[in-house]
Amino acid sequence: MSENYSRRRFLKTSAIIGSGLAINPTMLKAGIRGAQGNPIRLGGPLNGTFSDPVEWVKAVKSLRYSAAYCPVQPGASAEVIKAFRAEAQKNNILIPEVGAWSNMLDPKDSVSKAAILKNIASLQLADEIGANCCVNISGARGEQWDGPYAENYTKDTFDLIIETVRHVIDQVKPLNTFYTLEAMPYMLPDSPDSYLEIIKAVDRKQFAVHIDPVNMISSPQKYYKNGAFLKECFSKLGPYIKSIHAKDIAISPKYTVHLTECRPGTGYLDYAIFLQEASRLKDIPLMLEHLEKQEEYKLAADYIRGVGAKAGISFLE
Image (cartoon, rainbow, N blue to C red):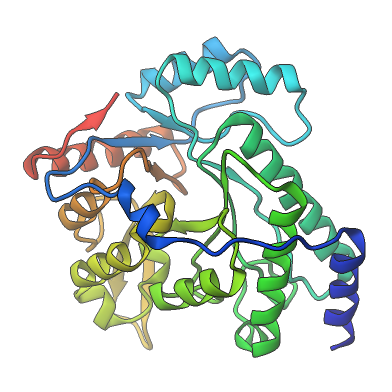
C-alpha cells in the first residue's frame, strides 16, 4: 500500500488531474461500416531506421504496406516530426501507433515514474505526428514488465491503472490521437468486458482500445471457437478500436494448456472472420509483429492478403 500511495502522490503532485469527458459510443459508432466493408490497411516493421522521410516511404511502399509503425522516437525535433508526418500524408501512409512499452505499475517507484514519463512523451509524439494512438500495456506488479502476478488482478491495482491512465492523458490533453492499452494474457484488460470496464472507469474521451485478439485467447474453448470470440471483440469494442495487431495462435498437446503465438497462417485463428470484422472499421490498420525475419513478414502478409482475396476484401497499398 505504501508503494501505491507514493506513486499516487507522484501522479497527483506532478500535475492537476483535469476533468474528462465520457466517451459517446453512439458518436464513435458512426465510423463503423456495414457488411460490405472497407479496404484494409496492412503494415509491419521495416528493416533498419530512417532519418529521411522519403526513404522511409520507399521502404513502406516496397512491402506494399499502407501503414507503418512510428518512424521516430520521443524527443525528436519538431522539424523531423513534421517532415515525417507530411510525407506520410502525402503518400497515404497511416501511422497507427506509437509504442510506449514500459511498466507503469512496477513496484519500484523509480521504474514506474520513468515509465509514466515515457508514456507522456510517447503520447505527445503520437499527437504531433498524427498517429492513431499511443499504446502500452497496463503494467505488472512485479519485476517482469509483462509478467504474471497475483496482484495484477486486485482492486487496488485496477484503481492504480485507472489513475495512471488518466494522468498520462491529462498531462498531454491530446487533440489528434488516443491513448490505448493492449490486452495481455496476464493482466488487465484481458477480455472485451474488462476493456469496457476500464473505458468506463477512465472516463476520458481520448482513451480508446488497441486490440490484439490473440492475447485474449487464453483457453481451449476460446481457441477452438475463436471465430465467435473475434465477433464478440469487434461487436463490443469496435467503436473504440484504433489499431490492431495481426498474429496467429496454435495449441500443443502438453499438460496443462499450452497456447503459442505464431505467424499468421500457421495457427488456428479464423482469419476470414478476423478480416471481415476488421474491414467494418475505416482506416484501422492490421499491424504484423514479433517475427524474426522480413521473409516471415512477407509470408504473413501474403497469407493475409490471400485470405482477404477469397473473402472479397481488398487492401490499400
